[in-house]
Length: 352
Image (cartoon, rainbow, N blue to C red; front, side):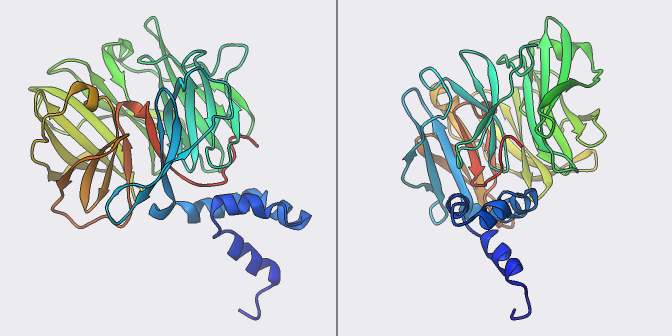
């Protein structure tokens, strides 16, 4: 350690600080401000911040927006801190569409505008343009947030408008939108198909595309973020005698899906993707009946040996998982996470 340059020692220490402490450290001196503002520092700090102890739950209702820690010893929420939106809104009409490395892609429901927002640093960036890019319509559009091989954070926006599909990519690096080609089956453009938000895993964005009735078609659309090519893979072989919902989650850079089927009782299986094929990891017993109002309010699942079904009020119930416990928490948004999301506290900026 004595042979290491002072600059290297300082760099190693600062990349391990909590995000808010990094923000305060920028005011120490000009040299630190310059160091803490480099992309190398932000990238390394982010990689060291993606740990379970650094995760927070952001919950939105009609009156408040709050951030809560996750208490690891009882897998519930800690005390809340009220968050003030740094952008104009009306009655908290903010939907959280996607999240990655501390950044949230959100929609202002009264204007349909898309924004990138870091709730830890409060920085945000409007993605809407005068030529009508960056405007989101619920139940018709799909959003995926990802980072490519050049460390450029991007937003994939899939639009369905009157039977016409448009696919656009926003680049943080160049601060602009561009169109990319995507040819898919015509029926997927129908509003009878529900597109999930994109889940980023292993250089690919994954979307579930599910038909909104019993026995309907269900597929997964994959987008390679570096080649910008799309392909379709099959859904796990789940029963089709009820409603089907697939919720994707990245677990240690391996894609998993909680596939739920049924009507009055839901049966949930956990699958993992190997190549282009799904392998069943476990089956859960039918979950207890849930009222529609509460069901629609579920914000995410947490797994850490057990699977915890959560609402904004706290833990709803637990499903015991007969498998090797995961070492960290992994969160999944439900109903596209419109009322809540889990994020890690980082200093990643929504703009360059």
